[in-house]
Image (cartoon, rainbow, N blue to C red; front, side):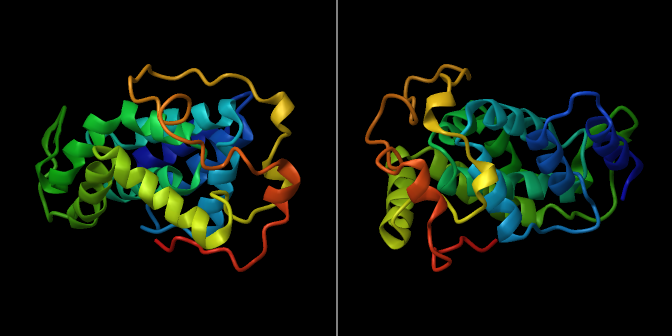
Length: 219
């Protein structure tokens, strides 16, 4: 693990008052020893986004992790993977949060790790950016097409009866506790204005009782 990645990871994990959402996404994304994330961990994060505050916390860390001048290609790749999964499986507010960082995701479709400029000049060496480009390009295309997002989420709902992945009850809070989401304004407002809420008709008990046969989006 690079020193920069380790320091960023520790700065969050050791921060007084760091929340469970911040710790979870930090452990998954800031880890150069692997370039993948298990479906179980991805679904755990998706479940947390049905509470607005953890969703905001998760995307603040993801936004930072997507900065190519600050982080390694492994961190960037895992951040893109997480964003893609949350757009498909998370609360609809995840689409709004992802739209807010769309320009950054679009720029990663041309990411070249060897050409990144830092305060010390070009990183140089081998280009390890291909996996990032292969993930960021399709994600950017989907985010630029709201109908594609709705089709992807509707297909998941049709297959498994809900948009929510199968995770533990501890990852959810009752709807009565949920507050209005505060995020960057966007005229499309996927989760709050435009279109039909694909998860609204499922109450907490139905979400928690989802069977293990739910389709899991494999990274």
